[in-house]
Image 1 (spheres, rainbow, N blue to C red):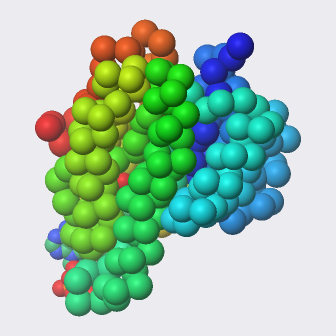
Image 2 (cartoon, helix red, strand yellow):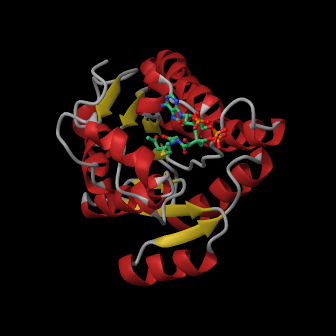
Length: 240
Ligand code: CAA
């Protein structure tokens, strides 16, 4: 039987590339999305991957969503915590709401989703969890105290959970993407983005597929001895 994976935020951007890479590796994929119904419909039509709507920042919705996926596709062996949002602004302008939204989705979402699949993975003695962190969680970024804190938290979460899962055959790893040519990065003001790209040794933005290939490796049977690690894929922008 094919392994079953859930990719959060799996219908757009980096998540879409991850869903496709896992599908191409023979995994049955459920792509979760939060709100963009039209994009999700087009994604499913194009890829033949089923899309499921729920809010990762809400634990009960995650429990229900995972329950539905398991009923329709089978037990979940692979979880990719990819869903993420930005609410950029300097500390002067950042509101408590901008802080909470980013922490709740980017970091709280990882907890909620891991919680929803954890018991099943432990019972079956197999699991692959990959959390999408960020270069900005490793190095910080002007205008992103909320996002940097959430992504940095993901790296700590990964290392702690890896220790809890190791004896049960569950690996937990993180990928720290640099600046990738997605809608999220396109929203950065052009002049700011040009300065950022000038500091990338490889000299360009990354492609979503370049992240997805790393995720596919960490989710494969071959990666059983890799756990608690962070794979940085950032064109050399931050060597960590
Ligand atoms: N270092 C020093 N100063 C900086 C700076 C930097 N890196 N970036 C901006 N500034 C300065 C500006 O020059 C400006 O200065 P002046 O007021 O003297 O002209 C000031 O900061 C901007 O102040 P504002 O009050 O206008 O700032 P703001 O609250 O509106 O926020 C900003 C502006 C949101 C920080 C904007 O500069 C920005 O979007 N920066 C990019 C943030 C970024 O990289 N986000 C990543 C999104 S993609 C992602 O997150 C994916 C991933 O994982 C990599």
